[in-house]
Length: 392
Image (cartoon, rainbow, N blue to C red; front, side, top):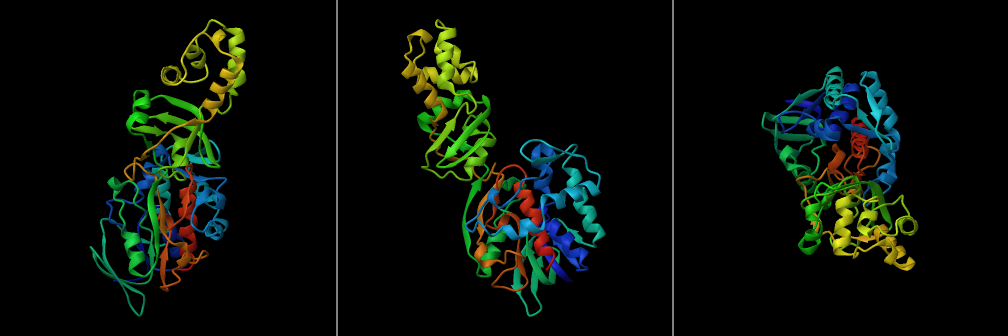
């Protein structure tokens, strides 16, 4: 079979690329080894798909080359995708911090993409794995489970290693290496952190305790959002965000009440409730079980009148700069994305085309561009897919 553009991967980036290429009159075939398209779209945002972030810009992405994402993001913006959503009359809302979600279901985003593909004449084949790729004079010969396909352009949109239960694989990285590209070190990102030994013992029976707002910090990078204690460690948006910056051995700090000013608050509480015990006072500022655990392990609890000013200030300071020793992450099993990937030095930032192999493109998560939590990775998928689809 012959086609102009063969896209490997029917996720967010692959489908957007297919739409852009198909609209140009290119014959486009999308293949995916999964049994249905857009699996990560369907599961994202609790089934409502956090499909973009209104504030998405280069500063919200991690990459060995922080400038690489600028071109694609500037040429296909959140407003462009929102316009497509509105054209399909999909109701949506802003949850917080620019995060846009479907009012109803993430299935609507997949349906929209499939309808756009159909309108552009795109063919999609699922349960179609790629077994071998070779370069030819005319482009590429790709042996798939459904036969050999000859294509002028080959677009790799196969995603990362995150959530292997949904079919994630290292195919894109292997193909990149086959054609001489460097693949930068890979690791799970946007992922819960685990504790071990006595660090886990201190917290493990707090599983389910949540802080509506905490700040997690590594070095100068911090994120303020919800935090959740789990049976194995800590999770919640603040932790998922900082996990992209944390490496084993890094000093991780938590501000357990970033909006409170606990030192001055404790002094005021001593004046108002001199007979109250510290653990009961802290339970007004923190979840009760956490307050009790802190007093069992670190702050001997006694009536407030027995604490000097300096002691209360120090307790407040520690709660705003609480050290927690993580041992690792939950890994790709629960990670939302894969950090690292195909080195951007080998790609054109405006087209996503390989600088080594004409006609070969890499888009989406397989590339060394990783967004923050909150719709940023979808925006990279739309932008990089569109950039390649405009030229492939």
